[in-house]
Image 1 (cartoon, helix red, strand yellow):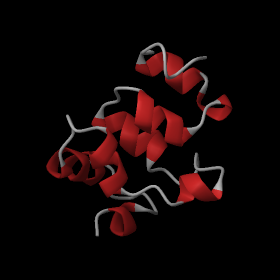
Image 2 (cartoon, rainbow, N blue to C red; image 1 turned 30 degrees about the horizontal axis):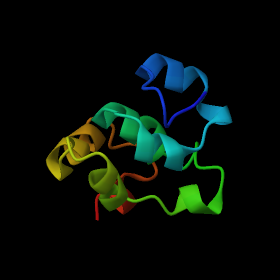
Image 3 (cartoon, rainbow, N blue to C red; image 1 turned 180 degrees about the vertical axis):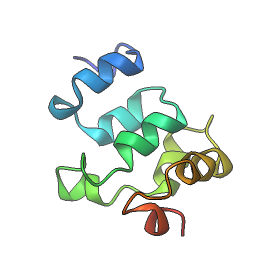
Image 4 (tube, rainbow, N blue to C red; image 1 turned 45 degrees about the horizontal axis):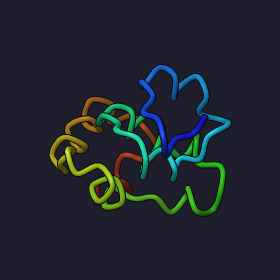
Length: 89
C-alpha cells in the first residue's frame, strides 16, 4: 500500500494495520477521531519506539481537521482503557 499516493478508507487501514506504520498513517492519511483512539494512540498497536512516542499533540498536528475536544470526547466514551489518563494529560 502506498500511503503517500492514495487515500484509503478506515476499513482498509484497519485490515492492514499490522503491516503499516502508524506514523505514516498519521502523516499521510485522513483519519477520524475513533481511528486515532483505537489504533494510532492505542499502545496495543504501537509496535516501535517511534510509535510509542505518538501523542495527542502529534495527532492534532498531522490531522488538523480533528480537535482536542473531539479526541478527548472519543476517549471519554471508553474510559476503562488503560491509557485514558495518560493520553488526556
